[in-house]
Each structure stands twice: as C-alpha cells, then as structure tokens.
Length: 369
Image 1: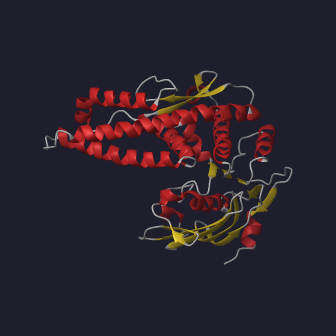
Image 2: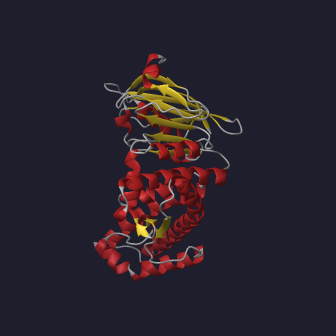
C-alpha cells in the first residue's frame, strides 16, 4: 500500500498543506513543533479513522477553527486506488468517505489501508498497563482478520450487558432465571474465540519478531508469552476446550462476580508478558532495551501483515531514531529498505541510501489550498 498524496485543511498546526511522499523511505525533518507528527497523524486518520496522537477528534482542530478535512489518495500493490476523505466539525459526527461512499460503522474501514505506527508515547505497550498490550495485539490482529474484529466488538457489547445484569441481580432486581446463563454462554463463545486467535497470532508472530530482533540487537533472547486470566493454558488448546474452560470458570465465580458486579475473567483481563533472557523486561530492561523491543514489535507487525495478507502496510514512524546510536539507526534503515513505503519524522536530516528527505520549511513554503 502506498500513499500518493494527502491534503490537510485546518488539521492541527496545518491550515492548508499538501504532502506527497516517495514510494520508499521518506524522512520529514524539522524542529520540534513544526508539524512533522501532525502529517503522520492525518495519514493515520485516513487509514484507521482515528488519530495517532489523540482519540479526541476536537483536539485535532487547528487553532480557532471548527472543522478539519483530510483527503488521502492511496494505491495498493495491485494498482487499485482508494480515496479517503475524513471530515470533522465541532458538535457533529465525524464522516469517513471512501471512494465517494460514506463508511458506517468505521470498523468497516479497518484493514483497507494497512498501517503500522511507531511513536515514543507507545513505549507504554512495553512498560505500561496490560490494557496497552491488549490494545497492541487487538490492533495487530484486527487489520488482518475481520472475524476477530467482529468478535472483539461483539464481546465488548456482551460484556457490558452481562455486567449490567450482574448489577441487577446484586441489587435484588427481578431477573429471569435463564438470562444470566444465556449471557454467560454467549460471552464464553466469544472469549474462547478471541483468546484462541490471540494465541495463534503469538505463535506465528513470535517467529517474525525473534528474527527481526536479531537484526536490531544480538545481545538478548526475546520472548512473548500470553498470560490468560483462566490461568496457565497451552498454546495448542483447542477452541472447544477454551469454551468449556470459560463456561466452568464463570459458573465457579458467579456469586463473586454478582457481588463485584463485574466479569472477572476473560480476554479483557489478559496480558502479554515480554521477556529478555527469561526476565520480564519492564522490571529489568534499560530504556534503550525497552525502545529497541518496541521498535522490533512494530517492524515485526509489518512482516506478519505482509506474509498474512500479501500487502505491505504503510509505516508511520515518529521520532524513531531519537536516543539510538549510529549502528542501530543504520540497522533500522536496512530493514526498512525492504518494507515498501515508510514515512519517518526526525528533528535532524539523516542521509542514508535512497531515502527521500523533505524539510518542514520546504513543505510549508510550497503549501497548497
């Protein structure tokens, strides 16, 4: 997948801007605050219908404006063109229009423009709360597996309904005796499907991740384990067995869940365990090791997507080279040379091979309406 051109209107610190990257690696350089990250943010909106920086659309408005418009033109490896227009106006619902047809719900658009990101704030995937790692794995799988995304959305709805029912039972509100069993059975099916897919993903992804990590660093042996709220389960556990285990667990903990008014077991409680040499990295790793691990995760995600779907995602890499030495920087450039289109931001211009460099000063000088 390649971005041919994107137009910005009233988006963050760009009143009007046109950006045309190269087909390979494009490096946007300029001082902090000049709008480099905002360029990536707009592309992310076109690919995934939400911002890279913030999930709040109103925060993407240019100062003293009440709307923004993004127009992106993309081309697949088979030369199919996709035009994406994102419109947002204060106090109105955001619109995403693809090839002149409005998309609703936005989840229908996920996967159409495959996109892999890196930003310094995403270090929380490695050293932050479990929710950050769940978000990473859900995003990685959802772009390649539409059924998984549908199951995930359905699971969230059923989980909300079951929690509401648990609260009603705890409040002694009259509930049909079969209602809780019905929601529990539905949740068990969806939970089993999600956990099964996640574990299958980890098995395939880990091979790509380890190979790529060795290209970036040879000092550690990395690993990823899936920590399931059911307890220790084998990676080859079948879907049917997972369903039975969830059903049994919910029956065992029903009285406790009613008292707590929430579902205590399920994929919304699971986590990924990241290891270096069998030690949990968020407890023992240095900042440089954490950053290298995150970069490897993101670049391995690109490889996984390409091998699964046959289309190379666009790489949006914000400030990826900060705090990295010359050797690590060269290693990343070497990997990216085979990745198709990569758009990178940097405070400094970096000359490497066939990299196309664009300064923010030249972009703003040549801006178009």
